[in-house]
Length: 378
Image (tube, rainbow, N blue to C red; front, side):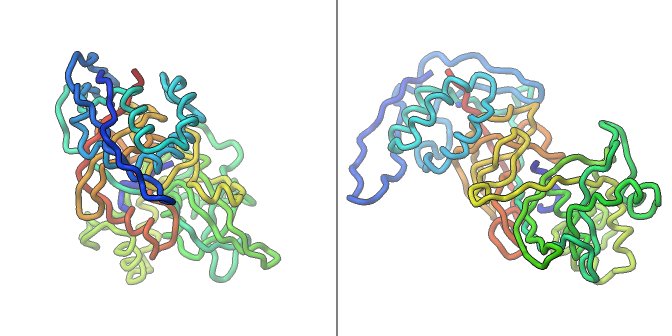
């Protein structure tokens, strides 16, 4: 579940041009495949709930032909575990091309798909927004200790579906709420802000110390929430003039300087997320958590979208230039999040790590313009 973006924050037959042979022992780079007949009759536009898809020739996709498509292939194969409507046919062919050359992969995409520019429902081109999210890795304890006193809970028995339950403040203060959560703690963290980060990101990895002293890494994934509205603690602090930028570093610094107001800040967001624990095998550790599509996320190649604009499992050509990233590449719509709303809106999954790792640093800084094209099977 990609829940950041708050403070962290495709009718032309193709032809293959000349391709130089790679040096012995090297993998060929992306071959530029052109569609010289980028003319002809395009199909009609497609109207969706929150977007309009307008067909375009391949020549209009910025950077097309320069992406290393093989890097997106694993994410596409994983997405085919639960294919989007109309994608079952291409998915049957996709695996055979996993060992294809870049030229073969690109020629297949151009032959099999039609690109469409994603716009607002009225056809206007909005200023799209690209943000990032990641999977945090945090230290945890299986039992409460003098230092680890903030619980991560699994859903309480009888949690009403679609109905408000106790707020974050009530969970911390009301005996009835605490009784309902008795024995439901999955693990305990040292920092309540880290717990909030996990809840906003929707999943994470815990290096958990078991009761017998052993340490192992597990994944906690989104299971449910308490039905309360989400409110950004970063926005709460900004509105009070307490911080100048809504970054986790700024929020943690403010909390360290104002410990007597920590609960006031945390309680400004009434939503609490409940988790389920998942075993993390060596193979599972090579991928991110399962997104809303139900398949594991791939760093740099999975995005969260508004499903009313783009269905899960859709291949998307993404273009964005900014201070954090300069990208023109193929990604897969495989997740969503509470802040991911609108036609041209995406949250890029950057990977997993701690505070000093690239996955966090990229996700925290990423906020820049975006253009999107969906690839629809012919």
